[in-house]
Length: 276
Image (tube, rainbow, N blue to C red; front, side, top):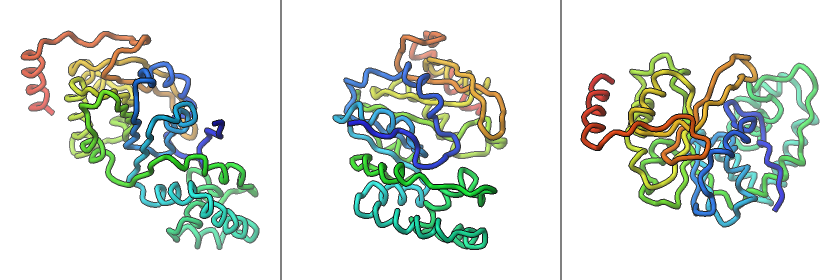
């Protein structure tokens, strides 16, 4: 099966431009039966793997209810055709005033129109824009993907981490993007993942912003920093680095995990938790 792997619409933080880098650190997917993206967004990893591994069950989760509603609607052939017809009618008569009214609505057609026509920031374009309806129609190719809407960390808790045939791909909100890290409960949950992931039997690939805090935790808890990737954010033009963290060894690992015996690891972990 050959399909268009580009995202349905522009989405902040999607990993399409990093795909070649990600591909080099993936686990042996012939031994995987389930792939889960708890922080799905534009589900870059699933889009790239879906046609190559039809035997794998893919689940894409996001806590954005409108986004998941769009995905579940547009993967259905009949609903997809209906929505495209409605989108074409909107596009033919769109004005800035009408667009501003549409932005306030939450139904699938209007929500999707704003994402397609307004781009990543949802603003009325300065130049006339043409929606790519062929790409919209091709979303039905993803009919077998399970799209769910719940808290990403809760989904991780529900996954069976003792299943060696499960592959978790985590691309959560980045530590460096939050100026209140120590008061943010979501980052405590990320800390728990770093603490426990080494002992999971499932395969984990975690993408984080590269900063001393996350690197210290990853190394301390025996996780593998498989790769450090230089990036440039498209809109802010900021140069940064992403680190690819795994609980399995890859051929591209840049640093060896610390060799801590069990008792030493637990003692030092408790010290870090107390400080944290």
